[in-house]
Image (cartoon, rainbow, N blue to C red; front, side, top):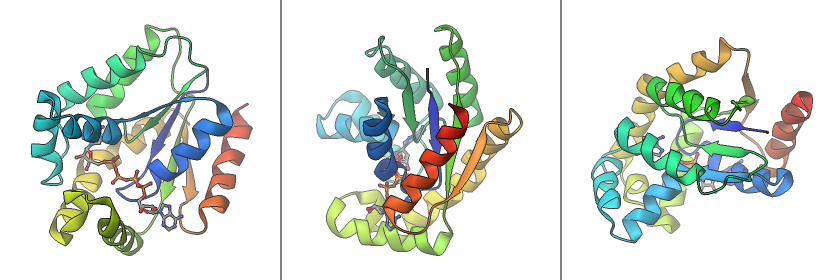
Length: 191
Ligand code: B4P
């Protein structure tokens, strides 16, 4: 199986690149952000809970996120592999993901990380706010909070995969196509 963690700060282009990668490699796309937003739209109990964190730029609690991710992954038992987009975002989530994949006799192949500077992130999210309708993009203070949460809670996940020699960083500024080619080059080294 090809199991990829697509990693990067808010607005790095995880969603953008995942869409292209799932098509090329025929993988199942699991985006925790997208699943939360679908639940918010459907006004489910999970959606209401997630919204209360997301609107403040905070992470949704691990327990809820992990349970939701596993139940979504279980809906695709015949998959050739997964792209985990925006998950894991904490060390606890990373451990849970390894444990979950081990029960299926598989594991993470690699972490692909989109490396983008803060200035560019702020500009992209502010731009996206004009069309996304996302409350977490609309307020510069919330964008700043998301970047800080990323640095404090999510960055340590990089070390977790780097220590297993699975971290592959890619420069995430440039055209969507050029970044996609760089990601594909990293994947081809593993195949
Ligand atoms: P996510 O939905 O994961 O979203 P994101 O980090 O904001 O964006 P992404 O990196 O996917 O950027 P995109 O491609 O859209 O998270 C939202 C929230 O959900 C989190 O803050 C958290 O509260 C919660 N959450 C999610 N997962 C969680 C977890 N595991 N645990 C706890 N909480 C969790 O790109 C951004 C913009 O840039 C777009 O407008 C795009 O068009 C543009 N863009 C992309 N590539 C570009 C390029 N090369 N050049 C210029 N612009 C580009």
